[in-house]
Amino acid sequence: NEKIETLMRELHHRVKNNLQIISSLLSLQSIKLENSEAKKAVNEGKQRIRAMSLIHQKLYQNDDVISLQIGQYITNLVDELSQSYGYKNKVDIQINIPNISLDADTSLPIGLIVNELVSNAFKYAYDDNKQPILKLDLIKDSQVEIYHLNIADNGPGLPDTLDFKEATSFGLRLVNLLIKQLKGSLRINSNDGLCYIITFSL
Picture 1 (cartoon, rainbow, N blue to C red):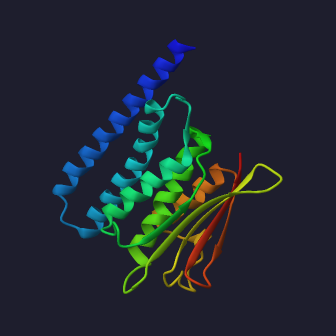
Picture 2 (cartoon, one colour):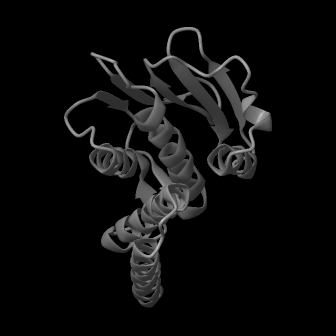
């Protein structure tokens, strides 16, 4: 009813504001840091917080306070990432994600997965790449409620020595945990650039 929707809207607004406060505190803390790796870790943490904050912002702005349009959310998130990494209008970004409504419990892990893998593309895929391309597709299986989220770049791919599922970096470990949270699976195609294929059901 209307009262519950008002309370949910206020909750999302407060969560978004609290996440922004945490981000601001991290910014203040990073000013005192001299170690470049520590500053990098703090900045990456801020971007993860922004990915979560954007979900709550969308939810309290929506007529429906319990689900959001995933296509619009991911488009906004990727746009912010491209600007943050200095690739705004420099990468051919092709997003083909329908505006299906997903609840926050599903949208949050998807958003964080996109945040990590797109960030990795901006960090590692486009050095000396004259025609950088980033593609994101969400494809529904024709017969069942199964979706395939594809995130692809035209960079050099993963090193042969890297086992993604055994990766020790925080970002890649986070992706593996989030895929488990979705009860999904991951395949990687590194033959022509790098393509992550995350399969999950709703």
